[in-house]
Length: 262
Ligand SMILES: C[S@@+](CC[C@H](N)C(=O)[O-])C[C@H]1O[C@@H](n2cnc3c(N)ncnc32)[C@H](O)[C@@H]1O
Image (cartoon, rainbow, N blue to C red; front, side, top):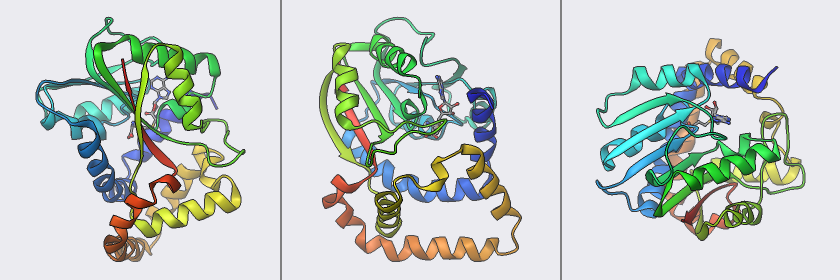
């Protein structure tokens, strides 16, 4: 299946009620890291590159001056446009490898789990140079990506690069690395994921995005859905007191926020 088709299906999966429920729970932790780390203010013009259905554009919208979300998936952009309640936020179809914006347009350019899905190395290099090109000087580029934990880091739609690889790619095009920070996941889930990834290399969900989509579709049809939701809520609840610990264990985290300066 072509990559574009996969992302159309993915956008539909994102819209699924169970996926949104889980995503909402996890977002609260990521929001804390972004709020602390990005020093958002009402003067900033922000690009959310690979915005999907707009969840991070909507996080930025009330905190900054203007937000532009761009994604190559038509379905994702349609979802984002119909969910958009902010007059300072716009969505556009487009690719990271050829961003439809002038040089030096954005104060903050952001990607969330998008560069990791550009598996072709030439396209990745183009995307990095495009992200830097459209960022103002001085301006910042924040990338939130799954980083490499084991050698087995590639599938048909994801490649997990190390922090070193990201640093090298951005520095090659003239950006400077400022800092990196682990994303705080609710502790128990975070520990579970880390363990799985450490033991098995890749968690099975990374083998093919279609397996994840099928998995969620099956779960949603299950008569155990209320029980599954209750179980998840319980995990989130008991993990809350441990959340502060993950701050000190951020080096273990599989997702990192990396900040660059142009
Ligand atoms: C895992 S989703 C993340 C979406 C969003 N950033 C979020 O966190 O909800 C990856 C997104 O990247 C988009 N994408 C993949 N390759 C792209 C490219 N070359 N240009 C623009 N968007 C791309 C996909 O369509 C998909 O919406």
